Image (cartoon, rainbow, N blue to C red; front, side, top):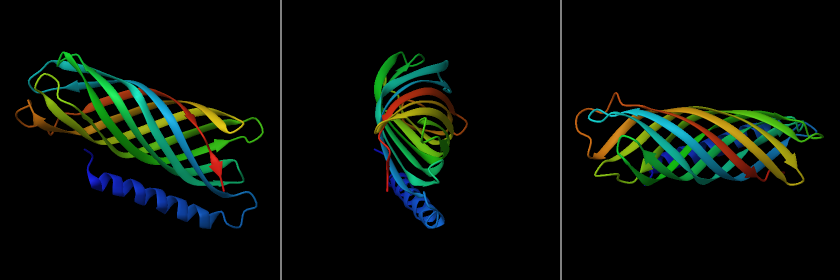
Length: 204
């Protein structure tokens, strides 16, 4: 299960950004608040050096959900909080096995869009996150303190946006629940992934 403080920070960030930019764009003729739920599919790879195993490549694939909440200015610039939750399958080379994993991260997105053509581009700074795989061959660990970035491009058609993103992040802390002894403070996971999604932006 995820730490409740992580979820609280995510909710707080969403409301803070939305409130601030709603006020900032209130006098602009085409500013406003937007909400953008999405359905995602992730295909990624994470590099890890365990203290008692060989270096490992963890391949992750799976579906998820996203939610972006923020404001836009003149329909061309948008800023918002971005929250992602994924249900992944993790295949570990060092541990020689697979397991389901829950992953969540949150960040701040800045982007630009062309309302006429429907093209959108954005970048997301990932502030925090974690991934919690189930036990693999008596090893149970949790990857925490995720930071990094995501860049994306999308094409808006009717009420749907078709998107592709590249994510480059690092888990700065590994928490051992069983199977890994000794200090884990220096263990990090470098995660790179492609994310395809369908989202549904709604402006107010």
